[in-house]
Image (cartoon, rainbow, N blue to C red):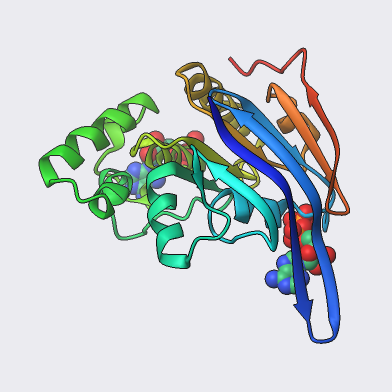
Length: 233
Ligand code: ADP
Ligand code: ADP
């Protein structure tokens, strides 16, 4: 039941005559229903690793199996298909479509998945209810508070039943109280059986996760179970 199986990957960028080793030798295995925080100082390789985890990019060397499929050598169009199916993204800046309602935003991944309108609306309503926004389905993003926008984004990430939720600094634009609320929501979706990878540089956000992986200079510096995760709810 390994969802993520990364073996000895590296990522090398060539910038003019300069070679940058963004990831040097990363081995990382994540099982279904784990809740992992990925931490590290600026420049340590978090974004590079997240882009690879999220099938936005491929490693220079090494292998990456996502839900049993080798994605490390795939072409962009194959990666896009896998990404839509397997990964639910949550971003710091929400990335919602401003002209679409909450329901339309949440149902968007289902259009790419080829689902009919009736099914899209039903599933969209279901996930919005899950994040406690049943009464905000027809609101557009600018008619919602920051925390509500992020809950719409979490609902959108869940709509396709992805193998992993990949959240990149999901509380970075939220105040302390609202951040706490969103961390409570992650707790809830984790207890519903979802696999969560949370990229953050904030120690108190990372402490909500049940496992903390720390990167430094393109290497995993530590990978530890968090015995006492912070409870938001
Ligand atoms: P973090 O997200 O932890 O700040 P990054 O993964 O963005 O770290 O960067 C790791 C290293 O790789 C840095 O030294 C950065 O300058 C370099 N890097 C990242 N992306 C690129 C790129 N597209 N081209 C060249 N170098 C890059
Ligand atoms: P916060 O508690 O984060 O300050 P707001 O004051 O922005 O939230 O919003 C309070 C409520 O009013 C929210 O439930 C939101 O859905 C609703 N709301 C906010 N702005 C608008 C708007 N422009 N049109 C309609 N409803 C709105």
